[in-house]
Each structure stands twice: as C-alpha cells, then as structure tokens.
Length: 173
Image 1 (cartoon, one colour):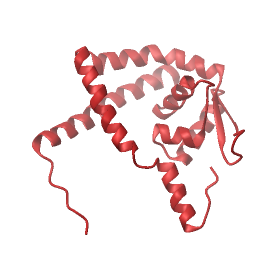
Image 2 (cartoon, helix red, strand yellow):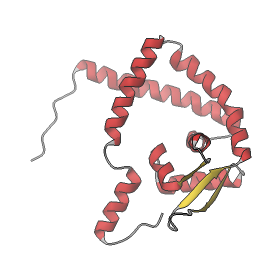
Image 3 (tube, one colour):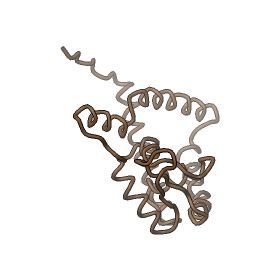
Image 4 (spheres, one colour):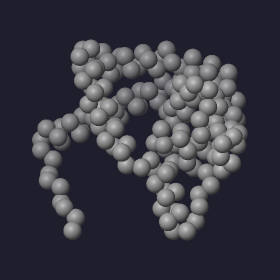
C-alpha cells in the first residue's frame, strides 16, 4: 500500500514557492540575455557550456541529455540547430557505434565567450547581489545536497532505455 506523505508545513511550502519563483525569474532573465547576446536558447547555452568545460570539448549525446536534464529527442534537435550554425559537430562515437559524440567548435567557443560576460552580470545582479558570501556558500551546499538526492534516481534517458529493454526492444541512441 502506498503511504500518503504528510502535508508540507508552512516553512517547507514557503521554501518551495520561493525556489520556484526565484528560478523562474532568473531563468527568464538569463534566457533573454542569451537570446540577445548569442541567439541561443537556454538549453543550447547549457550544451555549449558543458562541452566548453569538457576536457576534450566533447561528450556523448546521452550523457549530455542526462546532464542538462533534457530528452534525447529534444537534445538531438538542439544539437542539430547548433550544428547548422557551425557551433558543434556531431560524429559517431568511437567507443559505442550506437552513440553520437558532440564536439564544440571554435565558433561555438567564440559564442560562449561573447555571451559569458552578460550571463555572469545577470547572475551577479539578480541572484548574488542580495546574498552575502556565507549565504552563497549555504545556498550552494543546500541546493547541492538537494540535487545530489534527486540525481540518485536513474537519469531519464537511462531509465527509459531500461524500461524499453525490459519490454523487449532496444533503444539505439
């Protein structure tokens, strides 16, 4: 029998609504800045930034989808859009013929360099300006623990493959 969770107390409810509203306000401002400075969507920026941080500038599509918490099909569309702009390349993975590797190009790095100063300014102005250094450290700790707890469940792309394999079909992404 499924246990009914207790209702949220007023502090939990306030924390939840503050998190949702703050993240919505911040995301809206970030999305506007990314569109204005680099003609990028938020997900496209996440992909470029993730690839830009990767040691070889590349990652498998499935790993990218899990990292940015986006569907494989949606990520494929975003990667195709970035590839058409010359910001990434897509090639078959060297270690798994079913996978595709995405690599950031020099033009992709240039777009990142163009959008980062404004991106940092938005974060500083909207998120960090109202917080002390201790607040930022606490926020990083609290959100990091919440994220790590949520990440203990299988990534969405891996979970869907497991369900399909159980049902008798393979997913070749």
